[in-house]
Length: 92
Image 1 (cartoon, rainbow, N blue to C red):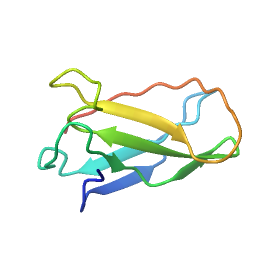
Image 2: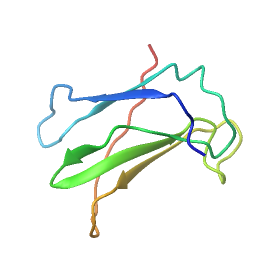
Image 3: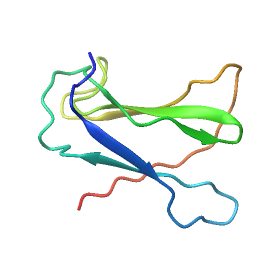
């Protein structure tokens, strides 16, 4: 189920040549309550003519191992697409 009251923001950091970059900030990530399979959503963003969203399960998707987190990059606009992407996590 959707984790209520999660504040997420999206920004655009300096770009690397040949890449489009986005930065997502999940505020109070440590304080999130929930069970395995619960999730929060990033704000929608656009890239290469498509709309996207990140689905973040802090305690993992239902099929994840215990102690793992799951992140899904999901195209929410119609039609099939193939994407190459890279994710990095920063803990401040």
